[in-house]
Amino acid sequence: MVKTTIKTTKSEEIFAAAQNLMPGGVSSPVRAFKSVGGQPIVFDHVKGAYIWDVDGNQYIDYVGTWGPAICGHAHPEVIAALHEALEKGTSFGAPCVLENVLAEMVIDAVPSIEMVRFVNSGTEACMAVLRLMRAFTGRDKVIKFEGCYHGHADMFLVKAGSGVATLGLPDSPGVPKSTTSNTLTAPYNDLEAVKALFAETPDEIAGVILEPVVGNAGFITPDAGFLEGLRELTHEYGALLVFDEVMTGFRIAYGGAQERFNVTPDLTTLGKIIGGGLPVGAYGGRQEIMSMIAPDGPVYQAGTLSGNPLAMTAGIKTLELLQKPGTYQYLDKITKKLSDGLLEIAKKTGHAACGGQISGMFGLFFTAGPVHNYEDAKHSDLDKFSRFHRGMLEHGIYLAPSQFEAGFTSVAHTEEDIDRTLAAAEEVMSSL
View 1 (cartoon, rainbow, N blue to C red):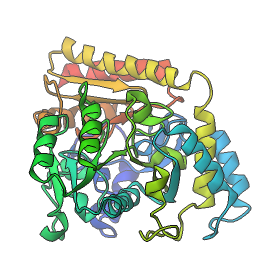
View 2: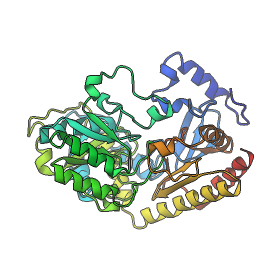
View 3: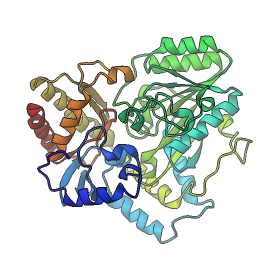
């Protein structure tokens, strides 16, 4: 047990009980704090940019329920819309007009999407889009990048990021070799490696899937020309380009990374923000490709809770809020202040560090860098990060409990929140 200066009695009791009820005491691995050590805090409630735990401690939150809380937790307009929707029922399992409304908003916003299908998670969206890629091209192989995480489906658990990176699992037991035999991997930002894979099997690759900005191996941005190069290569070889924008969609720009970098993929997966904090996922793309999905076409995919009225309601209201003038300029301003400040403090206190931000997404590595891919990220000082994470928690700052996860800000964060965070960071880094 890590020595703590904050009261954690109730968190410890609840987490101890949880470990006898759920594997590791959690419903998702990274929450267990395995990579940073110490006692995870148990949340009681959230509001705006803040968290309160069951012991009454308050924190400034930079996880934002792993990205969806871009407008701040429990935004009053989202909550009001959900109260109204609740009166009509929690699930229909049938068409509702809310699906049309959110679908139109997504299609209007995301350059690659002409038709969209709603599902219940980012993992589900990526599973479905892989099946669609293969059906449309008639090919089996797919290229993914080391450290990019596309959910926990068998075929994607090859050199994956997120919790797999956090826990140091090279692949997952229970995944047959036959399932991943058609999954090819390359280092992120290495266009030559992708060219070599296409040259080896020019007629067998269905497509390339990637996080256009990596958030599941820490925050890693694409090098100049990388996304454009992938677009050209996939065109050349008759393969599809898929952007997994579960994390970047509606976060680094209203139209996602494809708007930000002006590169349009064939297909896109979405999640997180489009559900406004409720379980959601989606995939979409060109009409000719999406028309292969049942019932229009032969590619089967279904879900009882897909298009759930509560998730659609929260998503619609969240996207409406994001359309307010100045939203992304504000996110960029405060996040840049935070990121630049952290790097400046690291330098001032004698720590090798690198990082950056785009809009409301940021990252900090304890390595001199630069970090272009997952291999570079693995040079980070993980012990130092764990001590930094715990120190910040003690100072009332909640960061992702892994070196290999991006951080998130929201429009609810204030300049004062950033100042308090940087003051805490200077105190913690001075003592590392």
